[in-house]
Length: 243
Image: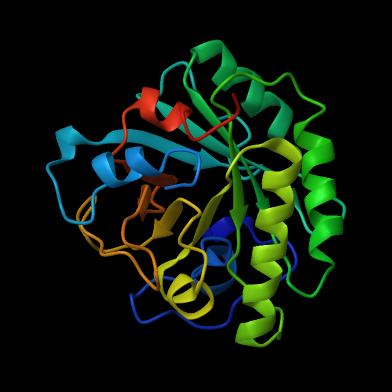
């Protein structure tokens, strides 16, 4: 998610796309097994006009008072948890406000590959499942740091977390990362819908990394907050969530 969200690890350098992890801005600067046919039909692999996209921001406790009622968002994603025991302080409010607005909601977990993936997944699910669920709620793994682990270890960690959450919920989670990280660590994850951060390009003007043949959500800027577009309609996004 946004550069500003990392609470315990700060990445030290920009990637070759000219962006950093969305959670490191304060430090450095101050889809789809449930609907494979749907993915092939409606997820874009090439640029399209902005009016073809569905807009939605993603937020965390760094935007505790984000005004959902005034937002043009058709979907929104909020940080729920991080690591083994961190719960985002604004999760409850954002989750409720998105429900009031009637838009597609998503909750994400910021992962740390130095921890046990099952324990992290259980922490995420304990927080999300404690809130009233709605059909179409999206679940997301946000993975942006290796925690000093090898490529194979990070890749295995991600697969374990994603497989476990899918088994427990019946929902295929989305996988979020910046383009370079996904390209390096994302081998074998193409069955999970891709939410990719790639800044400095037009909305939707991003080719999928690693083994993905398509992207589902494109995070195109973190100014003034994280902003995203999807080639899917709100109704199509809901098909990726709880049901």
